[in-house]
Length: 149
Image 1: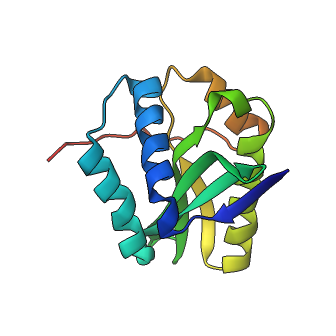
Image 2: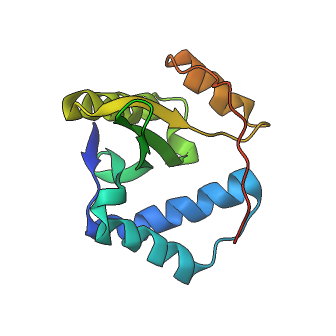
């Protein structure tokens, strides 16, 4: 049985492991334990920045995602950014991400101040892009730029 729930501070170790696995798999990046653990805990310390959802299969963690908030002055509402998506390999292809996404949509609609959902994906990750499109998301007309500090 699958359940989708709001993650709690007790879930930080599994969320940190999922983040490390996702970074290694998608970008071949090794995230240092201390930094990623503090980063996960930091969101719990600052709930005004976002939250995590955790998917469990038979009460065992199987996937997660993080939501962060972006204020839109053009819309006078908030975009929810879907980030740090990870599903354990043995649970992929079973609709687990779809269930996480449906829960995000349900919570966003109930919030009343959310104007849209956004995410970014690696250009080469065509499998994830196909999943997002299948769920109704569309490619935005924007490119993303960054400058690490």
